[in-house]
Amino acid sequence: MKRKKISGVFLALSVSGILLNGCEQKLQFDFKAQTPVPVVNSVLRAGDDTVRVRVTWTRNVYEQEDFPVEADASVKLYKNDHLVGECSYLKDGWYAIAHPVEATGTYRVEARINGQPLVWGETRVPALLLHASIECDSLRDRIINRWTDRAEEKNYYWLSATYSTDRLMDTSHMVLQSYIETNSTLPDAFNRSFDFEEEIPAEYDYYVRIEDSGLSGKDIELSYKGRRYYSSYWEPDSGCYKSTRFILSLDESYDRYLKASILNEDYMLDMDSEPLFYSPLWTYSNIHGGTGLVASYSKYEDVFIEVFQKREE
Image (cartoon, rainbow, N blue to C red; front, side):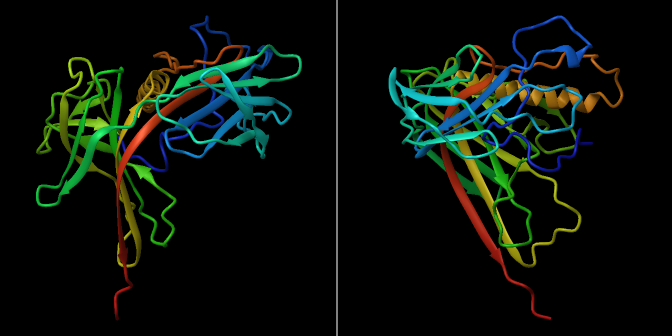
């Protein structure tokens, strides 16, 4: 029996409007008395031509409204300690600047808000994946991932796939695999469970994570079988099916944030039967003077698209 059924999008490869906790604190119940602090979020991808930053404020955890946005900040981008320029305000707290994101570059985002200390975060963009390839073995229903670890840097690899179940031609509504099955001994066990009714009993929530400890400079191969939940009404007789299989190389901040997000998802699912606060919820922030996340990643992907024509009556 599967542990859960996933609907909607979980862990998109961007960060916006998320409540990030700072260091460990004593539990306080008077949330309205807490003074809001700035939240700065920006995730850079190697090869992108634009850097986007969102500036908001923390809010009461029980409030249902969106995070209050900050439209009057001065947001600047630095690369390798040199000023790239100031971001232009778009809307809904989003700022952007046209700039090609280069692998191995160190980027710093600074936000100045009237009456507040400087808020900033920094990330080093991981190098592009070396000798990467992805192939699909349809006979065995396996996705085979191969690449070579870069010995010159610490690497955090995350593997998964997205797919679309939209009957229309719109392929923008992508969701992650619900769980992934593999017999490989390489993945981290933090999101692993076992279902002995399956051919491959070891399954992983959303991603397979590999830290390169002991793999420095080596060729890596990992194959997996991705499972997904279909809506009962979806039948691929017409429309477009899109799947993207990918290997990510994350910086340390993004790696720690994604691990925390998956663990929090597991905690929240268990709260239906356990007392509230039975287990601590935590996440990760690398922002100075506020909270949030400035992180980066590089990506290798393989895209599969299939168009279904409406059946003749």
